[in-house]
Amino acid sequence: MKKRLIVQGQLSDAQLATLEHLFEITQLSKAMSLDAPDNRHYLAEAHGIIGSGLAITPELLDAAPKLEAISTISVGYDNIPVDELTRRGIMLCNTPDVLTETTADTGFTLIMATARRVVELAEWIKADQWQASVGPALYGSDVHGKTLGMVGFGRIGQAVARRGALGFGMKVLYSNASPKPAIEQQLGATRRELDELLAESDFVCVTVPLTAETERLIGAQQFALMKRTAIFINIARGKVVDESALINALENGVIKAAGLDVFEQEPLSASSPLPHMPNVVALPHIGSATHETREAMAQRAVDNIRLALQGEPPISLVNEEVNQ
Ligand code: DGY
Image 1: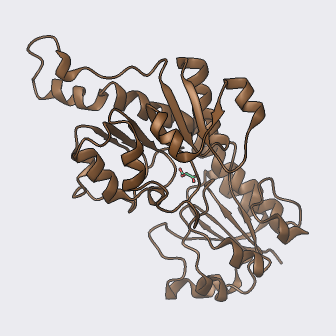
Image 2 (image 1 turned 30 degrees about the vertical axis):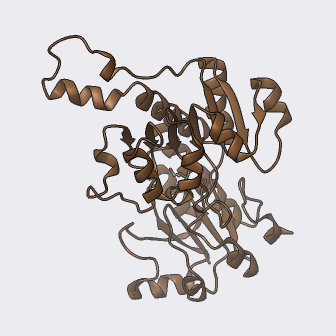
C-alpha cells in the first residue's frame, strides 16, 4: 500500500507527478488550515506533509498519529515546533543552500535601494516633480567603501557580506554565536559584540533565524546605539525586531532609513506606517522569490519527503536526532 502524503504548497506538474507515482496524494489549498475539521481524516492517515508556510501545532500532530516526516519549502522553520516533532520521532526537512544566493541578492537590493533612495525618487518622477536636476535634499549615501554590519553570519549572512566586501569594497563586521575564521580571512571580516557592531556600522543587516533567543533582538536600545546615518536592513524574520521601536527610530531620525523584506505580521497591512515612509523600502517577503529558486526549493522539498518516506536519509534534515 502506498503511503499517504498531504501537499499544501506550489509544486510543478512534474514534481507532483513524481510524488503521485510513489504516494497517495491529497492536495490542500494554501488558504485552508491544515487542521480544519474537513481535513481531519486526511491528517489521521497522513505519513507525510509537504508545503510552505505550514502552520504546525502540537494539536495538529495529535491528529496525525501516522506522521513520519514534514518537508517545508523554506529554509526557515520558526512556524514549526521542532522539539515536539523530535519527541514524536517525526523528521523535519527544509531547503537550505538552494536559496542562499537569491536571498543575499534581495538583501543587497535593499541596501542599494535604500542608500540611493531608488523607490522614493522613482515615485518623485511619476509625480512629475523632475523640473530641474536634483539637489542635496535628494542625494543618497554611498554604499562602496562603507562598513557593513551583519547580525548573524550563517550561509545567507556570509553571502550578503561577500557581495559587500568583494563587489563594493565594504568593511565587514559580524556578530554571531561562533567565530567564522575561514570567511573572516576570505573577506577581511571581523567579529564584534552586537553593541559594538551596531555603533560602528553604516549598514546593519539582520540575517539571524527567529528563535526564543533572537525574538526582539533589535529594539529601542539597539537603534539608539546605531549611527544617525545608519541604514537598517532586515531579510530574516520580522519578529527579530521590535517593529514599533523601528517605526519610532525612523520617524525621529534615530536612524536614517530601512530596507525591509519581513514584518512582525505578514502580509503587512497597508495601514502600517512603514510602507508609506519615504525612508523605507518595504518588500512583500520576496527573499527567495525568483522562478529559478522557488523551483529549486520545491524540488529539494520533494526530494526530502521522497527520501524520508522511503526510509532513506533526506538531503536536508533539521532534527538529525530522529534518524539516530
Ligand atoms: C525561507 O525560506 O525561510 C524564506 O524566508 C522564504 O522565502
